Length: 99
Image (cartoon, rainbow, N blue to C red; front, top):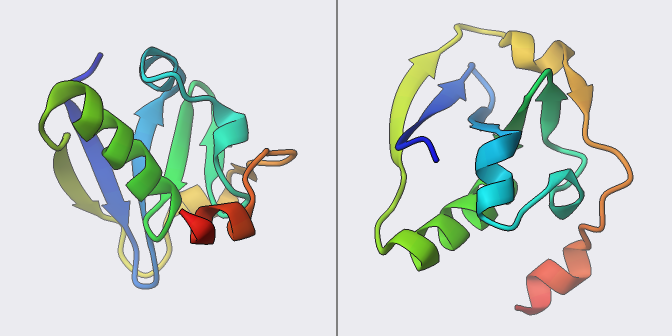
């Protein structure tokens, strides 16, 4: 498990970059996240408003602390926006709002 993750932002949004192996160690997979996150190679880019908080909450429950985030700003437009979106997830906004 990596101890530090990149928090990447552009002028309009932000994402936490997490390797699929790290997600698997937390019991998470691509299907656990919304279509507002992206994927590329072995990483998922978890959008800051919902998916990143899911990742952080599970990380905190397992390790007793928040993951360390290093900030990277990509200017007006991040290349992350050109990556494939997560599709076919089990994520349900209604379920998320009810918890």
